[in-house]
Picture 1 (cartoon, rainbow, N blue to C red):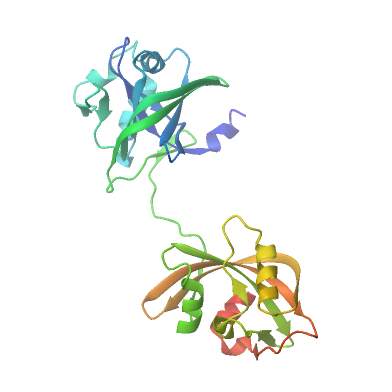
Picture 2 (picture 1 turned 45 degrees about the vertical axis):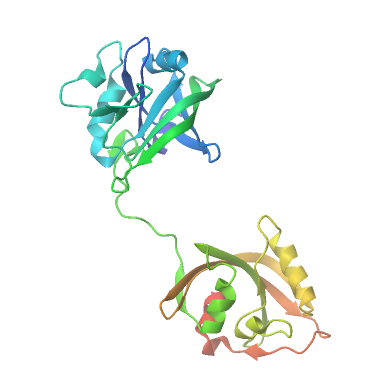
Length: 293
């Protein structure tokens, strides 16, 4: 376990406080936001810490998310206790600013959050201190410092999740983006019905279906398969859904417009007594070819 626990990757924060132990700073790996509204931040602190003593007495603390340039500060803050040395008082090292509450906050961080104690609870061999944020600021030009296997890392280049780019017609783009045009990603679920080398692409109640497969935008939190079944029934399409679903992640492009699409696809079989439908060969349509991959 001692070896395995080092394979987690964590961010690093400088936790500042003031109280009976004097002004102090400690390094903390286990720091995270745990609520949006109200904004709550949890930090896990070991017993006997001067920071914990300060927090319990003052009922406030600062969370300073370390930037890539602050590896040395984090190493020093984590390598010495307040009982050994006044870390914030070291010459030409920590640059701080004072808040109205008297908390020392560290300059040059990604985020600086001032917190009032919301809850303190024993969790394993640490105390979980949850703070309610009452003041916060950030620096868009800074990137957070990462800790992994006893070493510090920068974030390096961003890694984009796999997503295939496909140019589509205006009809297809509009069909998928109308309900997701204000969203970073639009979600949909659809059915692929095959007949020899053709794919079902049209229905009588939705003109958008003539440009693509039968699909719907499910409600948030709803069962995609059930939502698709309801949509097909309302459209008059007697299609039985079968097999396991698959995920298709696309970046739809039409002229200068782009829309990220996550569509959950099911295979289906058209019943003989279904209404008239139209079929298109995927060989002539790049969008349909991507759905079949």
